[in-house]
Length: 337
Image (cartoon, rainbow, N blue to C red; front, side, top):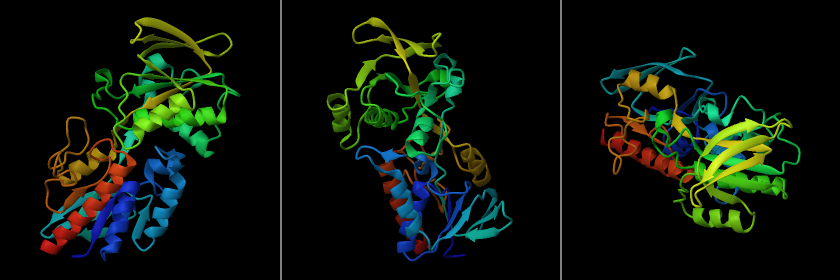
């Protein structure tokens, strides 16, 4: 038991932490509710800003953690505090005693159907970023319009939105929209591509270059303003009404496809885990770290640590860095014990 470390969540954070703990001499136990590893990144096509393959990253990590104890398609059904750790009961009936826990349960995407004005689930050619990513990856039988002449992207769907009960920025949506806009232009060189945004938040390394490249080399047009209404014409094109707030003029465009950049919200499993372990959640529903400056990977409870988007929206580089940090924190915690 003194060497048992349980990692709950097998996305990029959980996999990277597992890899780091293996290198430190532990044999961690990784529990993932889905039948596959990699979380959302396993469903993506390319990663920004270098356009590297998401599948290659997941495959590499999967090979590097082969020595760990993996439980796929498995949930934690109960969790109880012991004098020197925790005991966990899994949905497969196995009971594990652990000296330390790492929570890396990730996030889910906002349900775009809640924003009825955009027409998701109503009009066939209104889709989400996740739908488009699946098409890029060749893992979806959904078909986009043949040779679209005009494609629009709507930023901040379900994030920075008080009506959607999510006032926070999802951090990755702007860069994801730029990446997907570039990929649309690569697939359909003659299509016009529009991005409707509130504010462009491109804080990461090379992100501004990525944005400039989308305009200069791919002709992506960025329009500052919210889409107010989406309708369908008699020939099944989409009619989009918006306002260009920089020019102060209303816009009406006809598009063949509209992509909604669904924001990041908390994973539903966060609530059950926080209830079982007595963990605090923040005002946005994500798990609350010990503090938001120096103790991001610490829960405030001895022996429980966090990594990745269970505490809020994260990029892949941030997630990887947190996973490595959490592994070292766990090592230090067990060493001190």
